Amino acid sequence: MKKTNKSLVYVFLYSSFAFAVILLIFASIYVYTNSTLEKSVSYPISTQPKKIDRVELKSSDGNVEKMNLPVKVDSNKKYTFTFLADQNTAEDGLPYLCVYLSYSSFTLRSDGEVLYSNVLKDDANRIAKSGGKRFEILPIPEEYLGKTLEIEFESNINSFDSFYIPSIYIGSRAAIMELYFGDDLEEIFSSLLFISTAFFLFVIAINFIVKKHSAFEILIISLFSLSVGFYLFIRTRVAHYYIRNYILTYTIEYSLFMIIPLTVLLLFIVVFYENLYKSWRVKVLEILVFIFIINFISQFLITFTGLSEFIMMKNFTAFLIVLFVSFIFFIIPTIKVKEVKDINYLLLSVFPLSCVGLLLLFSSDEEYCLHGSACVIVVSMFFLLVHFLSFINTYVKSLDESLNNKFYEELAYFDILTSLKNRNAFNLMFTELEEKNQKFDKLYLLLFDINNLKVINDNYGHNTGDEILTKAGEIFSKIENMYEDVFVYRYGGDEFVMLCFNKSENDIERILEIVKKESEEYISSENCTSMNMAAGYVLITKKEYESTGYSMIEALKRADKLMYQNKAEYKGSIKYEEKY
Image (cartoon, rainbow, N blue to C red; front, side, top):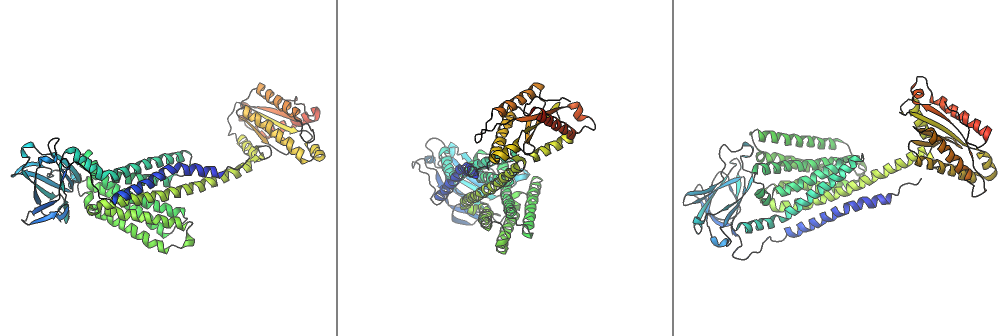
């Protein structure tokens, strides 16, 4: 029996992750490259959406000022500006007005007449009184083309100091959608990549669970990847356009905003556990995880009861993230190298773990949304790569240890010379039989002995004796392969025990015939020495086995006695038998 070759395991595992790793590296390069370029979409001049971003902004207190949009303004005031509904922006039909709102509302007017308003009413859904983020594309009626229209913005959250007035677009519906699809392409591509990676990891985790391996870390990594993927997608304008239920997108976004740092915290605890580093630091991290969970549940309850809502409590979640990141940077300098198993892995994990937390804060703010998303993508991918390699390394070590344990377990219960189970294995089975833990209708217990093996060893050497024992092992292995529920053990130096469960008398006679025929046909290659065996067996019925006081030891003694009678009387002729 040979030890399993570990190199095959390494090749299999690393090749299975290779495709995912290559995709992640490609996506990182793609996002980094595109985020540094000026985003633009080329259209014919006549069909290019017109961006209105330089206006005279009039506040409700009468102040007028030229401003570049988007701009952050006082949330306690309303702001208006005018624009021309130019038909030339859409040659293929009526032009559309496009507005992307964030916790604000707008009203469109013409000479005081309200054409459209999405201002939330007082009895609006209590879950999202702030309105969340909304993507509005509405046609401009033909009778208002060429006229000057007025648009008024107001904040839905007066308790906030400021809100954003966005730039608006006028053009054909197709051109506007193409523009926003182009702007959101990086986030959409990256989100699909993260979601695909999550499902890939989840399948691996399920496979590990089925095979009874630990899959906790890879499940958390899968949840992290899935959360980042959906977080990136749900923030895109394309998502808000197609998912018209703003309450749903609002709830999902803030749920993920709280789940991502929670998964990062859990992974950081796993890093510490894997490094055999358990101290007050880990206890504090466990407390932080508990606080994050309580925060998550509390915010849901408070929001859905209408007492407050997610956006109002975002600062507390941000505070927890800052607390978490600060604690990580605080504890790292206090860790001694000798206290951890792999300091490089620990330090390598700190950077992406901390950066993900910090960048979540930036990406949650409209002012830093674009750059924050790009950074979250790159850092999250690096984070996933670190933990991919970590998980592979951990699993390979675990698998190697498992193979070693299995190898040494086989050494303990298998006989190397004959490749049969040894006496230790027989003792385990015999204990099961003695304790009446086996279920069968009948059991044949057979004992075999190689005749004159000691004489052969003395006269021809132990090499010849070992060759005969190896041949005996081949004969018995062949019988094990031919019949189900037949088990052969090397009981002693030249003795073998065979247990045949639920076999017929004809099966036993056939087995004895095979042993007799193949042993008599064997001739040693070194000294032309032949081999023959003596045998004895007993039949144990179900009724006998289950009766009170029945002893398997007595059955073994009877079989042994019969074998030695056969050995003395027939010297290798397997004919003697006695049934009980």
